[in-house]
Every structure is written in structure tokens, then in C-alpha cells.
Length: 76
Image (cartoon, rainbow, N blue to C red; front, side, top):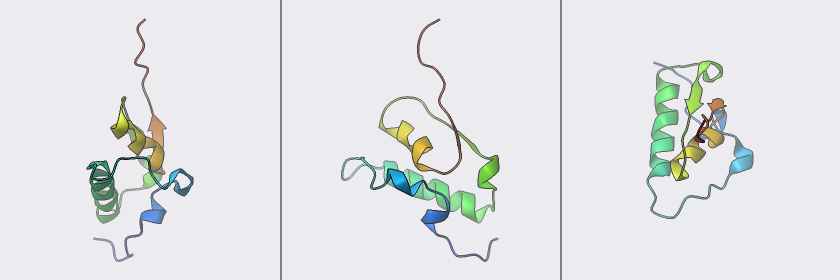
């Protein structure tokens, strides 16, 4: 377990904040939980790839300072 204190700023792209999620939306809670888990597990953020789809939840991959990957949703 890590001894370094948890700080959101170590894991986010601050230029994209404040976020655009609606008040009361649970996406911020998911983001916070994800970042705390990465910190507690001492994962190297440079070795994490975030994938996303469409909709509001897809913004998480842009907010975190991990390697983003957004697959194409278009047809052939």
C-alpha cells in the first residue's frame, strides 16, 4: 500500500476542469473511485490505457491523465 497522500491533481488533466457533468450525476463519483483505486494499487498511470464509448461517461478518458483510446463507432 502506498504511503504517498492521494491527490486528484496527480491523475487528471486539469485543463479540462471544471467538468461538464450535470449536478447530481454519478460520473464524478466513478471517476474519483477509479483514481483512488489506481493510487492505492500503485499502478503506473503511464501504463494504463482508457477506452471509452459515447455519451457523458466517455469524458472520463479525457479527464484522466492516462493514455486515451476511443474506438470508432462508425460503420465499415
